[in-house]
Image (cartoon, rainbow, N blue to C red; front, side, top):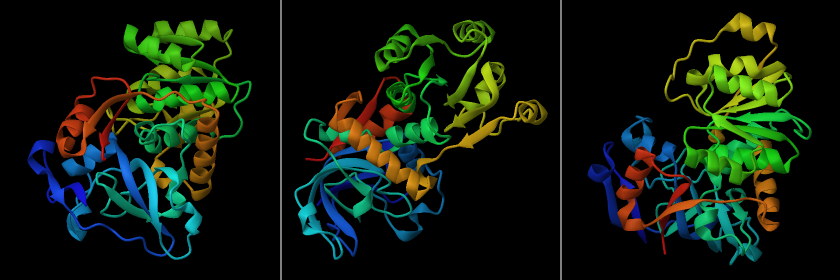
Amino acid sequence: MKAAWFEKFGDAKDVLLFGDFETPQPKHGEVLVRLYSSGINPSDTKKRAGSSPTLLKAGPVIPHSDGAGIIEAVGQGVPGSRIGERVWLYNAQYGRQLGTAAEYVALQSSQAIWLPEKTSFAEGACLGIPAMTSHRCVTAEGPVDGKTILVTGGAGRVGHYAIQWAKHLGATVIATAGSKRSIKQCHEAGADLVTRHPNSETIAMMKDFTNGKGVDLIVEGEFGGNLDHILPILKTSGTIATYSSMANPVPKIPFYQMMFMDINLRLVLVYAMPAAAKLQASLDISKFLKHGNLQHRVAHNIPLEKIAQGHELIEEGDFFGCAVLNCE
């Protein structure tokens, strides 16, 4: 099969290779998927750059956890009726070497989720990390119907889906954004109020919008950088669900302030989500896809052999939506 891989860490243009690679075969409990699209996420580019130093000890790595395609074969223990099924994939390269930047991938049947005809393969490749992370952030503490949720960075890949989950599940949504274009993206996703990123002025706007009550849940994309700003808008016994802290990876926690507010702090990583949470996210994603309730943004669809270009686009970050590889 054709595939892209790396054998050493470094810049995308220096270490990503393209060529022929042995086609995997499905083992017990696995399916073999003919890939049509492979999603590129920031965690993929970080691993290629060396964030997981032991990753290459077991050999070359075909990157990317997300993708979409058609099941062509099944291993023992998997019903043959799954052959021919359109599927989206998650966690394909988690804890192993072979991901979705290839024409084929073999992985656990439970990680290949039914994809309706109305959803393209490129859109299906956007779902794994962004849609599942946002689902966990919004739903982990229970039903959100009637609650008010703040989504910081609402135009980002995770934030955009978080707004949609929250709205469809009955919440009032406030989102923050950094530009007029970002504000427009948040409104299109369904946010009820959109402000600039958290500061004293925007927090005052949020307090006014909530009649001084504040928000029940904050989906936070820049925890360390925003913590001091967002605490004043969070209700007592509220929750911060955060999935990133890139600007300040070692933040200081105002422990006593947060303790007296009885705050719940949830750190979310899609790879570490409990099996039950992954199952529920996949079920809800499929249900919402069936009814056409999720918006997707495929910003770049790049040939597999130009994978380095895709990684560079993700690292530059100057676009809305997802970057995917065309694996056909």
